[in-house]
Image 1 (tube, rainbow, N blue to C red):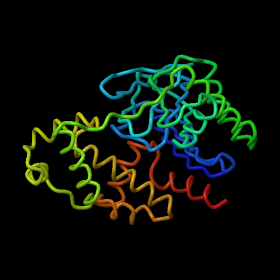
Image 2 (image 1 turned 90 degrees about the vertical axis):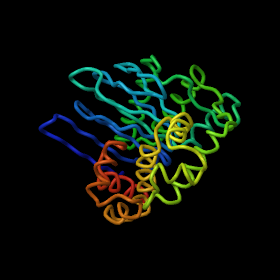
Image 3 (image 1 turned 45 degrees about the vertical axis):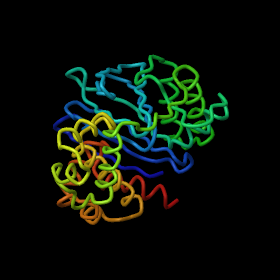
Image 4 (image 1 turned 120 degrees about the horizontal axis):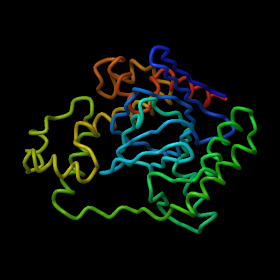
Length: 285
């Protein structure tokens, strides 16, 4: 069992990010946040966040939604979202991050859905499902592999039945969407030394404002925000492979480890070191 715990006594916040080795492909987070604000970011995994106290508010695509006790915040892979307190006392939640392949295999097994299965609503008001998410955590904490795996499959199937379906995106058709995709490829390939917006637009034969608008329409965030998110995601991959945080920071284009830590924590919820302790030790078992 691998764990990475962070506490902030002055703010009254705590975050416990970890893995249970007998539940592969799933990360877990148990946290209380009060003043913390997650930057707009994405995950490669799904997110099931069962709120146990307070209220979390988050921007999901172009909507501001809220989730309170007995509700689950649901986020599909690669979907931009934020996160902050919806009430002064903040929020407490237990979150599971299952790999996309796990959710899609459950969708195929229980609903005969083949393809990019996902969820159609960012908030599910289902106290029983929320208890199942909490049950996954508690079973993992107790070392009960059978219960943890069973509860994960039960809650995923339940939410797929009530709020699931195929979410295959439409292919880009406009010139603006094609330019946005090309810009994304350029930024991903050159994230250490990215071009300016003006240079990027010029190379693509468009104007900076047209590219900015097209990029936001295609990916839910402007190019500079997308690049920060991409750097964090690449840094996670490097940390998973055992790269020290300072080296990971340099490899993805952050100025130093503190620069990485600031943005990493705003997206993941814990600093790179705590994340790596959880992920690294879990993979070593």
